[in-house]
Image (cartoon, rainbow, N blue to C red; front, side, top):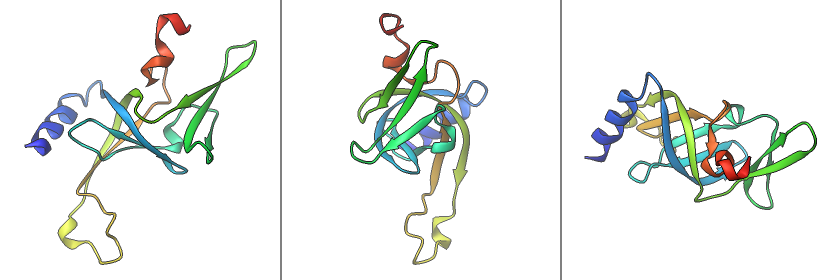
Length: 129
């Protein structure tokens, strides 16, 4: 049962809360992550690295990382591995959802990447530092 597996993974990581997934898609509201067996992981734009901006043409978020000498555009591309921390898990009673609320998910994980070491794994490799 994938629901049991994801629930067990989330509950067992609540103390440290760090998981690795893959960027599925980006929207102006934030980034959707897949764990491979669970697709409803969302990182709202408020929980992305700062400063960042959404590129509507490339349909991705860009972290504007400043190293003191210059600013580097760090693209959050689809299909890239990403490390994030679980902020909360939302459960919804989909049996009670209204007709206009078809987007209501039974379970959604909310995450953050706005802390050191979080974000795309490629950003934190030693050869990129």
